[in-house]
Amino acid sequence: MQQKSSRPRLLQAMLDAFSLPDLRKRILITIGILVAFRFICHVPLPGLNPDNLKTLFESNALLGMLDLFSGGAMKQFSVASMGVYPYITASIIMILLVPVIPKLQALSQEGEAGKNKINMITHWLTVPLAGLSGYGQLVILQRSGAVDASSPMLTVTIVFSLIAGTMFLVWLGELITEYGIGNGISIIIFGGIVAGYPTLIQEGFLAKDNPIGLAVYIAIVLATIILIVIFTEAHRRVPVQYARSVFRGGKMYRQSGSTHIPLRVNASGMIPLIFSMSLMLFPGIVASYFDTGSGFAHSIVQWFSPNTDLPIGIFYWAMYFLLSVAFTFFYTIITYQQQDLPGTLQRQGGFIPGIRPGKNTESYINGVINRITWAGALFLAFVAVMPFLARTVTNVQQIQLSSLGLLIVVGVVLDTMKQLEAQLVMRRYEGFIK
Image (cartoon, rainbow, N blue to C red):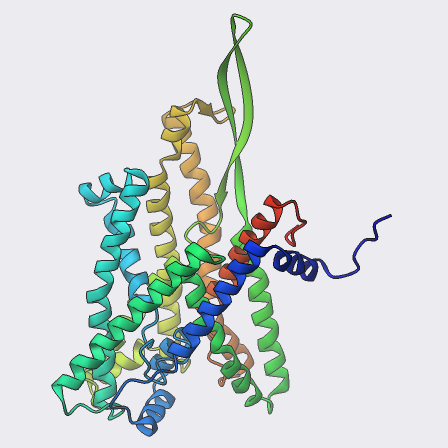
């Protein structure tokens, strides 16, 4: 009789994954590329003044927030300082332009060939966006004396190096997608965020004089992670029936089958938070070019920075909350309009029981989407302001935790686990997601 393994389900599944040569190869390729990514994050650019750079990041909460997403690469001013975020920005722009520009809309309907052309346009758009972002970042560092500003050639060299670093990371991400496990770009972002967590743990020790507050802070973070998992996986099942004709024995028979449409509660993922954060940080970044320590520009930098001081903190986080709700509805509507679920059902001969096809089906589906989107929007808005609420309630100011980073990390882990589960199921192994 075969004995049942006493190992934990997750550990046994990982051992099963490594026992398969092709799956083991994919996992090792992913790990190897992540190691290469972390090495690149420690390759500094020329003209750096480490002492001034450290002082700047200690005094600027905005730069500290951006540095978290680069895994510390920005604080070291390496070639990977901007990460893959110019590519993410270009992708978001293309998502918004596809339904607006007829040529792009036609490309999106050409299958894999059209998708590849849109992806190529996204890559080309990344280059100027990376150049503008890199130059803006360089100007801020040069004004503070963290980087030498004496030579125009040095400025050009640094900007081109930052562009090359971003495009190289995008290429690494695509290698993971093709030869590894998970979505490559998401894995690269995940690696950068997780690399900053040891620093967060060190910052947590600085708050050891407030043990109760620190314990409550940790409890809030854990509860938020559980909430993220629940809402990421939550969906509303809309029942659908299909009627089809089958020719059998010289006669035509009508058969029906039933299934469902899974409408996700959080269909927009992390995109609304990226929109909201970008919009909230943009005025502060622009004003920082003209900040002299006082005046109007300095006030803009203060009001549009992730600050917890009252009343500035209330303004920033309240706007962040409202924008997260608004962008969740905006992005969800665009996504479902592109999918055209009522039209797809009608073309495939499907219908919702008790609902007439056509306008009635469209109204019913839109009503369901609007109701569940409220839950998703309020969830994302709460996650967005969670760091501010946690610091205000616990009085723990040392930990600079990013809600967007937490959402990305949990989402990437869940997605990667599902892909591993799918690979194991295909090979008739028992996975670890029940």
